[in-house]
Amino acid sequence: MPDRCEDVWRSQTPYVLAALLRRSGDVETCEDAVQEALLAASTQWPTDGVPEDPRAWLVRVASRRLIDFDRGRAARRRRELADATLLPADAHHAPPADRTALEPATDDALQMLLLCAHPALSDASRVALTLRAVAGLTTAQIAAGFLVPLATMAQRIARAKSTLRAAGPPLQPITSRDLPERLHAVRHVLYLTFNEGHTASSGDALLDGALADEAVRLAERLHAALPDDPETSGLLALLLLTHARTPARTDDHRDLVPLAQQDRSLWDRSLIDRGTALVEQALPSGPVGSFQLQAAIAAVHGEARSAEATDWLQITVLYRMLDRVAPSVTVSLNLAVAIGMAHGARAGIDALRPLLDRADQQRNHRLHAAHAHLLELAGDVPEASAAYRAAARLTRSIPEQRYLNRRAGL
Image (cartoon, rainbow, N blue to C red):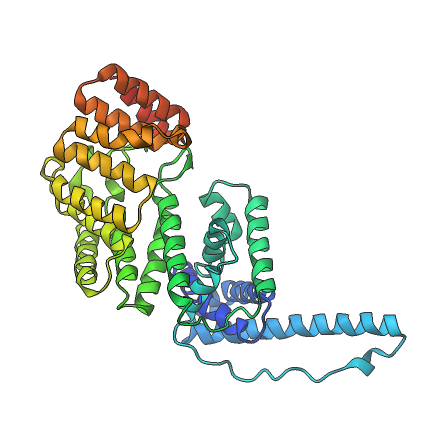
């Protein structure tokens, strides 16, 4: 029963919060009311059972808490005004606002995702607020996932709420002109969240399965709200295809296992099949975006039953397309590796040279690791060892550091 209760709480959080935000523009107060309702559920449901309509139960209890908060604040304001003007407190009494039945909404989860991707927020704040308000994670859970102190994450979330409060009504309709940009931000937030769970940027663990699972779950919600949006389908496909490899990415000592050495029998074929089907449906249905292309690349890897069977020529073509659609350092790096695998290590090193010559990339550990890999394939063992050592010095991930140091001992 406790596990089922937690699943219900977390799945209903965005809907309950959205319902309250239609009645009050204060994000922080509404979230406090939701948390009070969840606390009440945590004490009553294990004993009384999950209600037949848990969302309605949570909305009803949270609404009562919100009214209590509003009354308390109104009473404080009346007392303060009475003290200031020497008038009786009830002289300033105003009838309560009309709080009738909540306005129905069909896409509350999407509304909350759009709110958390507000353009006034930074990427870090967007991710934190999404996990707090939409995924229902505690501040402590989010801080642990991103390996930052609890106080730091609490301040980040508080600043995000203050920014939203200053930006105006929280659930005002998104115009058709602004929607594409806001959706792009939502997809980016989910992608960043998944990446941090799939390959932690620092710390002694490579994976944070809970964080990656949350990103996939939120991507499922976004796709359910926008099933015909090709880039949303591409994002979900990419996450599923990448997540499918999780069981094979670490060994018994929790050390990193590179893609070429993974036991592919451990890959989740059901996730690969679903992700492949999603990207095959998305690619012909509209403009091709970066998530669709990344998913297509992941699908090629997923279809290869061994590293030797990987179609690197196709991957190279897809990376060239991605480089035109969404150029970035990461895409250029991966394209160079693909060229090296398809056309020989020397060709890959030549393709990597422009990045290696950039002063702003000298501390990019992934660049040095890719260079080391290509040098190793080319037979330049001393140079490869030096590049592996450079990459190991720069990464903040302990598992990656151990792997790179092992490779440096060629």
